[in-house]
Image (cartoon, rainbow, N blue to C red; front, side):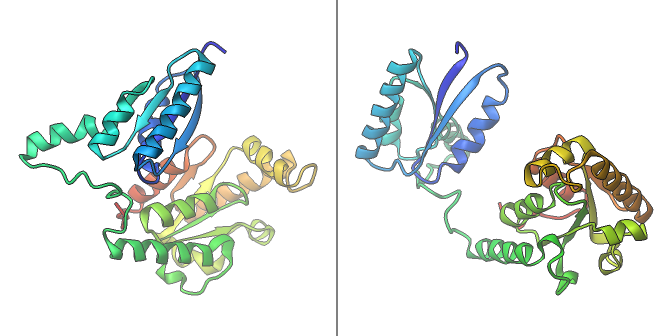
Length: 274
């Protein structure tokens, strides 16, 4: 394939930073098949040697230079990586030098600062939020529901759980979520257990054909995944949300990151993790 390119995310820690920044760059290029490999904990000469050997082998196989997106902080190891047979984009070297000049100070060049346990308060906030999300996933419990910072509501398989988990893990937000059930559709109203907390509610909806595709993977050829059932539930849920006058987001074409960010803005919630 002429537009196939190999991409390596290389880091001296987890690789999360390199992946996040690198993927943001790669999404700007349509028509390419990027084969991505993440290599974390490249924090020694031996590790660099192994990565460079892998890059060289990839170059020989592909006939094209791999793209290396690096977040290695150590200057010496970073320089060695830049000497590899690849296009190396070194995020720290690109940004650290201008910041040092602007701030009139040398950086610590310490690995792992962005994802290490620098702030125990943030770490325990994250753990508490995740535990809360797991305990209040899919309407499992209404205990301590008043502690929720936001409550997601919508039909089954519309994206409530992954959005809730992202809000807990990445933002430290205590998020509960409730699926709408046949009883709710028959009553034509949101559950009594949550309607009293209207100011915390946020509705998620989805295109019926997208919902059908998702449900069909879970329960193929069932009433649950039928086109008729999906259309009925989505229509009924949207009507109930309108009647309750709560904000609604369509998840059909939005990423979890977009959904979470919009929810934070709409509900004026502040991230507890940075």
